[in-house]
Length: 358
Ligand SMILES: Cc1ncc(COP(=O)(O)O)c(C=O)c1O
Picture 1 (cartoon, rainbow, N blue to C red):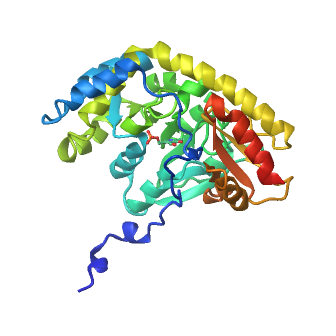
Picture 2 (spheres, helix red, strand yellow):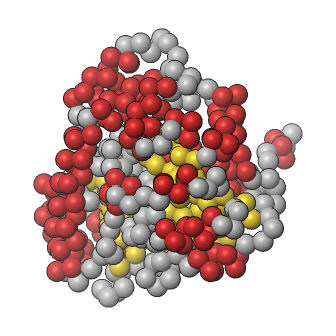
């Protein structure tokens, strides 16, 4: 019996993204996590709901959708809550991609979008970012053909950490009629959003996450802002085969977090300060980083003649885990991604980096 023969081609061909491991009791700086723990009210809401784990979560996620409507200033009918933002990529591909359709993304950029498209039988085309890490709108348009369904822009971009596209650029792409997916997972850091274009363009999808600025990565909550028609079609999939997809504890924690915005906004301000100290320190050791609008920074080892792989290996001797960016397309072998460390660990991280260069 050959069961592999029965597996869909898209799955069989899928190449797993080489995210690598995480480590308990190490300083893990490879996921861009927020090191401030959730506030007391979030913990209480989760604990209270955990005691009701015999019950299913709210299939409509009404309380969270209502809270998000106020937070994102978008009507409830334009919001879809997902089980982490990564889940949104899959839902988007399931909704729009038929075998042979194509999607365009930038390189380097967040690769989960590409994987989702390919798994559902689509083809991914890449428009390289400029040397300044900016999206080339004309290049993207040049790649389009009649089977182009989706265009993905991550703004600020993972892994480059900067703003890669202007509102004007997004409007130009929206005018092509393709579905434009604008990933604003780091919105709380960048404070830049083009979500007001949702009123005019029903082909725009804005993606957000609770994992970064709001600091609840472990709860796995994300959301999509889009036109009513798009939300309705995507929701069909959730409502039919995955109606209880977001755990009740996650819904409760996310609602509580939005009720105490001051807490995560305060942490964000502290993280920005830490990021400045970290970047200054990196600059002093000849590793200037890209101006970051995210929870992580990107720096090059080219001048010091080291590969990302070797550097990450050397840092692991100090039990610090960084990300070698060679897993991203068009990123070369010398780029390293590091989350903003906890304030108390910045000196230690900088010292360890200096040691790893020696
Ligand atoms: C740009 C971008 N989009 C989406 C995600 C996934 O977010 P979530 O944790 O909500 O699945 C990440 C996570 O790092 C990201 O960097």
